[in-house]
Image (cartoon, rainbow, N blue to C red; front, side, top):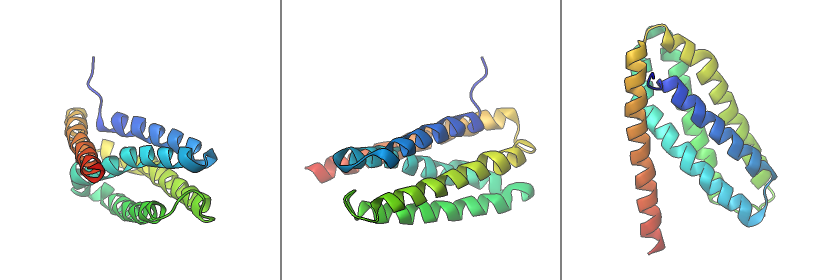
Length: 157
């Protein structure tokens, strides 16, 4: 059985994040906070691992460099919006609007990544390298997840 390629791994995670957004857009109160925390635990390590493993490789390729740089900038905007949401609670009148904007931004980013960046990368990244990128990405993502959990444990003490 073939190993998953980076595109498969990222697509699966994109779908997981999309589902969390759908749930979050309908949630209120404590449920919204819990879903937002779960969303961040998926989204932040995903973005950091892309930036550490995937994007540097795609930046090496002339045909994928511009769309990759755009993706990096979109990550920064997402980070800013997450920070704004972190500073408020779901009872804030701006909460739902900010969640909707965040969902739209991430959706746009995913569409560009899967619809433009991945096809360009597939032209120059071999299947074997795409499998290696998936392995490196997963290790990096898992490391970020562990860092977040450690920070949460430290904050709870």
